[in-house]
Length: 625
Image 1 (cartoon, rainbow, N blue to C red):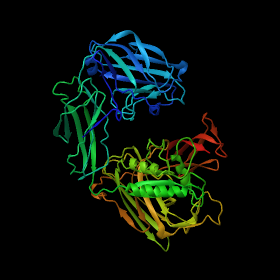
Image 2: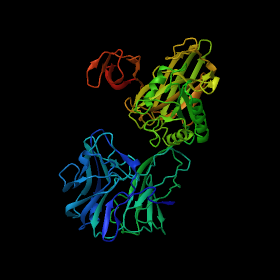
Image 3: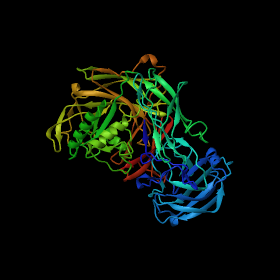
Image 4: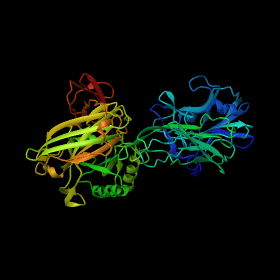
């Protein structure tokens, strides 16, 4: 077990002197990096909530002033509107206006009439709102543990609980006069939904914070797993107010596969009946244990170009990161993000969708499982000029769950170059997204061609050569449930050579498709055509042409049915014109003002595209560069 100072995970409620108590959920850790905004509206705001039980502990005490920290002073007239209320949508008990002279500094609001806590209130909110330009971040948090039902922010017309956003607590503090000492803890948000296998050690780390005004010397942890309860007693502690505390649970029974429900409750803090509010002392989660022989691979997609001066070094960085990580990784190289070259396919350009929303692209770059690691990038793609960038992204992606297992079969007739592909995808547990998508790539190794800073005889590996499905985005499967089996098969003919969709020099644009150097890569993940951060891949596998691969953990006897895969439209721009792969009945293009425009020689900008296929309309924003 270990004690964690609030410099690591700060969380505060009710801390101060005997004569005054600072009520809030945050320590005075003010960091500009923790500023943010929610939604697209000019109105922004934050509030904290005190529960009925908390208010009973302060019955009869008075609130005479509050302090707020905001991330920017650039509000309308440099003002914020402050309030004390029993609801976030009704009339406040009292309100006021404060001038913000400096950001990231406490602004004090002295109530015209101190408020006496009756203890009968269902809850109390204290917070602020302001109008501010969309380029400024008004909101600020401490990035500590999230607390459910305690911190709120204004988001496009409504107040939302920020629990689960990994923001921690708002920097809002209330002064309560003459509050007595008392004992209290709050259980912080703990991530128990990791990737666990049956029979392997599972370490869970619950955490709580001393949110009272007295030192905590002892407590009990009551752990309930599938109805079996055990109690662990912790004594001889010295957890001061403002300190967080975490402890490891490692002796859980992991012998069984499947879902396990767990509840952890912190009880008997400083002895029985010493804590007045135990409503926030529990954490409930569901764990899933995959088969002991479960195989999970990560899909690393790189972005590169023959003419990119740093891409050769980027290839080495990626190789170093893969070797260091010791994860099972399948690589695919997309020749896009920089100048197109003799390898660039139409789909490679489509995948520029994953770059950050600023519209610019770069190489060398990489994404792992299409998973966004917010500490490095706002999108799944990170720069591969740093080995650590790629390595950190690999480690972060490895914390996600695989959800599915693959059985990939390929049969090759070398004389006719006919390839038969069959893929079966078994869901172990419900997919996290209502829309899941699977696809199969063709990749080729051992292609000798030029590479800037590496010579004319550089060996290009993992090179993307198109999709077996014929669709850049693959095939859609809705609402994948535990035990379901997705089965799909197709026969294609591998051409003698594969031409770039973008390189016009036909004397060079003729890459021989060497069958023994080619493989099929299959993957499945979540899908959202409008949000590039919602495409996290669950699992993937790879088989050379003519070979098959069944992942450990794939057990066909557990399958219950086979949902039908739907064709997904691939909408893209080519030479200023919107194009669609797949069958459709109508295509319309509109500018952002809502006027329909001719689908030809489109000027640079953003357009709204509506496509009707199979009686259903698909609407998508698309960028013409």
